[in-house]
Image (cartoon, rainbow, N blue to C red; front, top):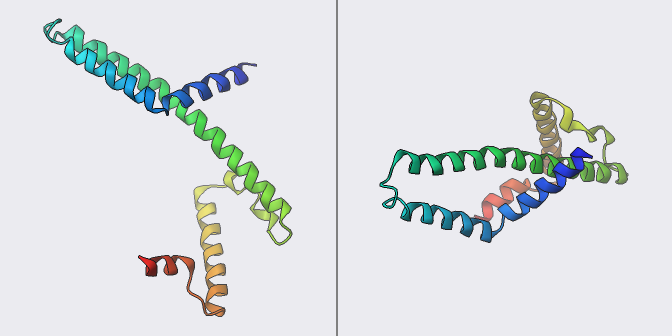
Length: 136
């Protein structure tokens, strides 16, 4: 229950924070704060207000962004795993490799690149990265 509530709130806030109107509101608040400087004689309290507000917003947004990225990554992995499972020629050993260490994933990536590089060279074609470089 708490997980669903947090997800709904985090999704809503992340959706709003990514809109141009949220940026405009943030800029407007900073401009208003700046114009009130002379009114408060640029006091320490006046500076503390914006520093505290921005620190709190930044602190909370880190958790919301991380939650959003975690959900997006998990959904993407589930979709990719389903594609691997559904394609007859795909190797099912790749399902769930996101749970391996960075070193293990890097070794797998290098092995795949080496394997695909050999196939491309045998067929007499340039690797896709090399073809992309040639276009630039």
